[in-house]
Length: 129
Image (cartoon, rainbow, N blue to C red; front, side):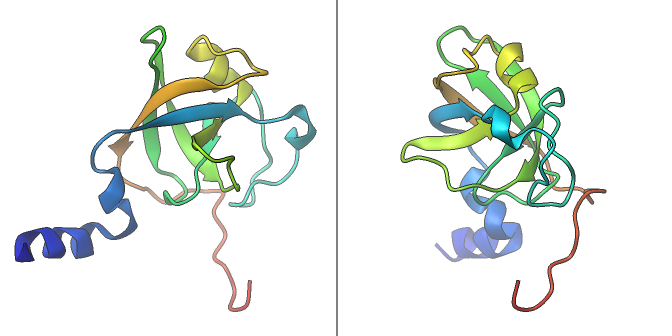
């Protein structure tokens, strides 16, 4: 029990994502094209990026479509209040890569594949933001 607590402290906010998570993925709406993401970069639907509620910016995760087995590695660069049951919001390029209908949702598995690195688009937040 103590070892598990120490591991949780060492991993910080990534601890719940050490193993795979399953749920639904959705696709960014076109209205977000070119808008700023939460880390400050402009959203490009042609890049392999995603929004996740808690993973640090720059974290890379493998998203696997459970219906067809296709997978893609994406970089977390945005936040979002996802609908209940949804665990990730994908760019259109990422959705296409896993054979997902860009207007729908798909049941997916999300696995962290790389620790968070410095994200060039990330801006430090100021107190009160």
